[in-house]
Length: 334
Ligand code: TXA
Ligand code: MG
Image (tube, rainbow, N blue to C red; front, side, top):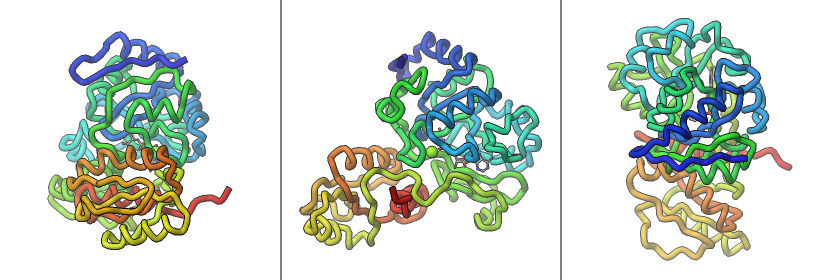
């Protein structure tokens, strides 16, 4: 059954952390908070433990996991080769929401990398994650702690709702402060490119490197598992221009749908004839932090269709737009 420990950054329950580290050593699964989303963790060096992660998530085994490390000093244990640009980015952004794809070190099991000769690594900026990594001592392979294809969890309550007692421990660190997943970059050469936009912005990466990033299409690396319909709530998501959100919402509500609306801040206070309306915060950081909780909330309120628009794609807006596009993407028909 689930062993829950309420933890906030002020008071880390070190007994709960030690117990969780013990569970990892025994090949078990621990859900834990990171600054981005909650992760479903297993000992990254234990292929059998990692296989359980895939089973619990119902995730295809070809979709590699991110290895979480306690500090950049462990990088060389996991990556066969760390180019100067990767080293610089690790120094500048870790702990933080940046994942580096590098050549796989020999000790990394192929279960963890989905059979690839590359490995994705990051150092999370969350006191509970860092305490767990320190107590455990090794790398923790962790995808987001949701069922395959659905919205990532940003609270311990979301994790329990999604995975129930399929996990051995859920560490509760409160709501994740960043709210969207890490930025994944191909850092195998001196030419760096973004494979998945996330919590570290393109602008910040370019400022750190002192040069523009390469266009993603130039990287031969693919990110398995970035299906069009990833990050999707139950409700169908429809994207329109910001100034069309209200009219479109009212039109589909009228046609018999239970419509949820992500109302752009420019229209705050407007009267919308829909089933449920979320007034979006004006700050992109606040929007990113709550994006997945908003989608979950609209599902919970019984919406079958969500009308939204893309935010401007600068800074964190790029990650939000990426997730909304995927949420609106074509789904396998049941
Ligand atoms: O913020 C995050 O990144 C969160 C927290 C828990 O750290 N994790 C996360 O994991 O989003 P997941 O499994 O939901 O997404 C990881 C992505 C997948 O799309 C996967 O294909 C990609 O990382 N990935 C992992 N290893 C890779 C590799 N070697 N090459 C290319 N892509 C890789
Ligand atoms: Mg995920």
